[in-house]
Image 1 (cartoon, rainbow, N blue to C red):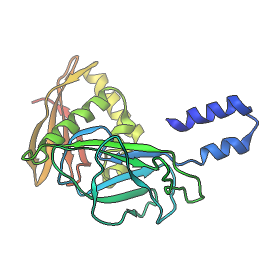
Image 2: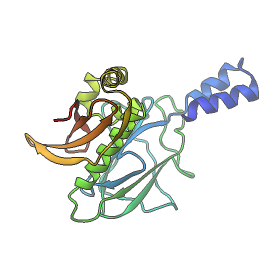
Image 3: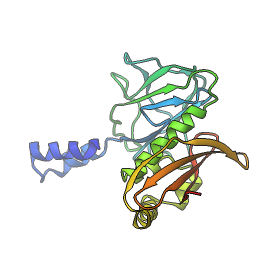
Image 4: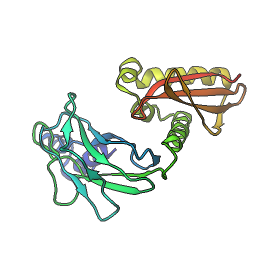
Amino acid sequence: MLRPLLCLLACAAVGAADPATTAAIASFPVVMRSEPVTGAELVDPSLTELRVTFDQPMADGAWSWVTTPFGKCPEGTARPRYLDDGRTCVLPVRLEPGTSYVVGINYGSHHNFRAAHGGRALPWLLRFTTAPAGTGGDLDLGARAGAIAQELGDGRFAAVVARFDPRMRAAVDEDQLAAVWREAAAKGGAFQGFGTAKLDRVDGWRRAVVPCRWQRQPCELRITFDDRGQIAGLFLVPAP
């Protein structure tokens, strides 16, 4: 969202015929997604890693996970690292239950997150709150399932795909997910909202079942989560 706005401002200031300026602005990496999703509440305090994924390959061995004045920063437990994709940086952490956290990415005077070609990443904040002690992360999954249902209802398919685990992401893209949802809408009518998620386990997998209200046909959104809270399965079926 930041990059198009910045490009627009650049063109207004220097004219569209300045390719050097436009290319320089386009070289700034931006965070495309995070784990947990920024703004998430009731995050499982047993989570041991934070992740941010940029829109382009990054320089290995360089990062700036930064303490900010806006909230507590998680305790790091090991050196950050990049995954094999070259875009996702992982920070091992130890979280406390019932705690609000804020972590800066290239915040303030710390600018070590850079693209492989050298462009400095734009600053960004990862905010989340962990679930109270004793919830076992179930509250987090219930809230996450409700957020997924809302994203589908709003047509924010890219946000849902960003929650997929690697296997799901390789099998289903944003356009395919949108097509499935449009097909369901053609049969069920207008989407009218969703109910409270019910949590269970199926073959060892954690699952959330979210009642979905459609104009003509009530359905259930069945979401299977892996151990890291990513979507490992997503099914929309008629309500029993």
